[in-house]
Length: 303
Ligand code: FDA
Image 1 (cartoon, rainbow, N blue to C red):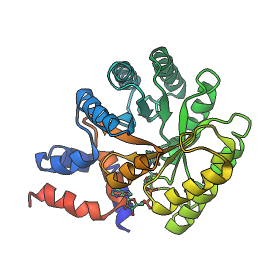
Image 2 (image 1 turned 90 degrees about the horizontal axis):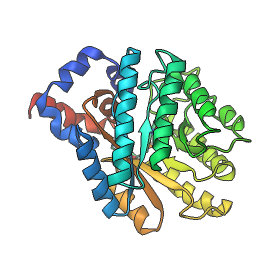
Image 3 (image 1 turned 90 degrees about the vertical axis):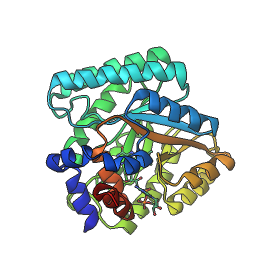
Image 4 (image 1 turned 45 degrees about the vertical axis):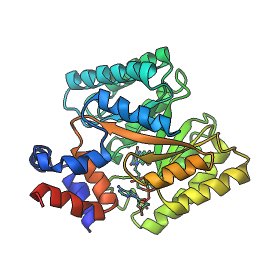
């Protein structure tokens, strides 16, 4: 399937350097990525704030290769939260633990995460932890669990497609963390993840009810009308008010729906990626909607 090919292409370093070096792709990249610099991301955040939309800034980059790189990424994140506090209050940051070194040294990663959470708490900015491929899923869950007692407002993304998610959620029953429910964006083996889109959607609907019943201030990361409508109804049924949860969407995707939800009185937060390492992120967005690929390929060949 084309989505599988794109998800595999997302991990291909040769293709990455070929595509990233191509100036013609800039237009397509700009649809999904706020810019290469923090300043550009802040400008996007301020523009979205003026439309009543909150943001979560994501400094692009994943899977660092050594501890020096993970420390540098942590420093950049700390600079981001300090800038947010001054210039885009209300924004959160979204971080991938592979960027903070979980694949290199989980203990060093835990220290980096702690450093980021301390610096964020000092300036009143909240941190959201993305959930990546299952190869780092378990350590991510453990790092989040360890950090939670000191930083209970930290949010973790949970993937509906993963077969072990209901069990993970059960293990959170006493802790009641903040969660962001998403379908799951990574190529996973059938033994670990659902692959059928209808089954994934059904699981998303089921987990929506669970999260609304058990977790404070949840976020629902989806652009799917079926999931969105279900969240609205499930929230009413659970007695959760419109301002007591968030819809979250990706920058450049379904902007009309983002604005409509704001008009209806819901909280909306848009995930705004920025930075130079946009290639794997963009490939995942192509995999979610292969129609995007046509525009992208046209830009690569310059037509
Ligand atoms: P679905 O894929 O069925 O899309 C529904 C509709 O939305 C499509 O028909 C189309 O109209 C539109 N749409 C969706 N994606 C599009 C795209 N790329 N381009 C254009 N239109 C598109 N995943 C993960 O594994 N770990 C994580 O931490 C996160 N974090 C995260 C944060 C936020 C805020 C969001 C919104 C999503 C994530 N994801 C994620 C990605 C998520 O797992 C999933 O891959 C995408 O959200 C697509 O799934 P939907 O629920 O939107 O449904």
